[in-house]
Image (cartoon, rainbow, N blue to C red; front, side):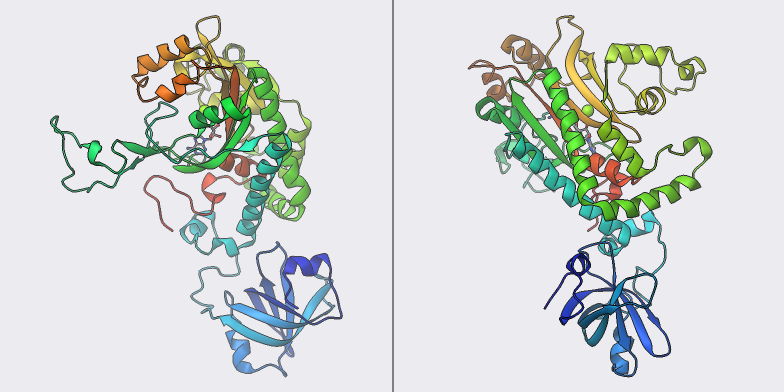
Amino acid sequence: MKKYIKEIFAQPSLTEEIIVEGWVRSKRESAQVVFVMLNDGSCLKNLQIVLSLENTDENIIKRIATGACIAAKGTLVASQGKEQAFEMQANTIDILGEADAEKYPLQPKAHSMEYLRDIAHLRSRTQTFGAIFRIRHSLGFAVHQFFHQEGFFYWHSPIITASDAEGAGEMFRVSTLPAENPPMNEEKKVNFKEDFFGREAHLTVSGQLEAELGALGLGKVYTFGPTFRAENSNTTRHLAEFWMIEPEMAFFDIKDNMDLAEKFLKYVIQFALDNNAEDLAFLNERFEKENKAKKKEEQAEMNLLEKLNFVVAQEFERISYTEAIDILLNSNYHKKKKFNFEVKWGIDLQSEHERYLVEKHFKKPVIISDYPKEIKAFYMKQNEDGKTVRAMDILFPGIGEVVGGSQREENYEKLKERTDAMGITEQLWWYLETRQFGTAYHSGFGAGFERLVLFVTGMGNIRDVIPFPRTPKNAEF
Ligand code: 4AD
Ligand code: MG
């Protein structure tokens, strides 16, 4: 009977004959036997396969190389080694895929994250990336489970769009026009009327605007899909292609929105704690090792598991942008001129400011609301003060912003004022029409999926929590 290694460890049977298929992590020979560590990706653990040298073809033994893919048939026996309770005594080995052990890029030793990024086609065969991607799966599953339980409908916003949802102009063009000598119009500009969609089109930066259309009919919807940003940010927190979760709710004000976002984050983190204990324990060890190697002042006070449990148990701090600025202005950091960027009301908070608030001042997740309207998107509901909008960002320790959201402007005149100022009223006619026919107060937010995976896995770079990262000057694989 064929078995996955995960099933074998869950229910080891020492009587039946079983077959396992997987990749050789390492091979060790003694006088009489060969030990092979086999992994099939189903879980972190390897199964130890034992072969008698006497009963196995010499040629087969040679071909069981690190990196090779094999099928082993045999029975489980109690192991004499201390490392494992049982192992497989193999009767036959089939070589499914050969590997030249010397040329195999993944040698049984520690490799740097940078090196592994260059061999992303193979890195899911390592313990670390196996653990990360299994956790990524769990978190994705938990997202759907959470919203389904909360009565939301999964809604699919288009990937190709003719509007810039965030109004930041950081979009990738989608075109079938020839790159050389494209058709031109009278103004000597590329004539997009001749393009595939008869107009300029781009990859979406957010599914929000179309999610709002869904919420204003279905009540509560969420999107969970890829989004694209052509911003030239080469940081450990930015990708050009990332996945975003965007719930949108009719009859939710900004407070309901914050409550939902906090509940959501705690739910998916708890889901990983409950369902990925083995992988998290492994990443926790890795985290502790890395943490010890850091300078004293940069060391985290909590290990990964402590941090995750802490966040689930804490009530997130809630402050307004104005309060945040006051805290920063009154901080020792500010007085000692430790911030590189100026602090004053009206600035866009820089990551050093966010980190100070979350890691030094409150030491827990913080929700900041009511930002100046100049630094936030056009669709956010304007407050009575005429200066701020009903925005909210959730900041996590070590990560910064994981969630950005707001109550939406439901007043037609006020919204149109802003779209007019941006010159996008015409292209967003359908968005504005929802405010003319039965408008409703509503809210939503966007959670960066990779930022969430980054937080839960304790990794240091967002490139390591998505199988094939897309960043400036990099679209390999
Ligand atoms: O704050 P953002 O830009 O908000 C929106 O796009 C809204 N339309 C969301 C909404 O209200 N429906 O992005 C939302 C989140 C950020 O908080 C961050 O976690 C993540 O998306 N994010 C990125 N993640 C990885 N790489 C990037 N370049 C990201 N840009 C934003
Ligand atoms: Mg944001």
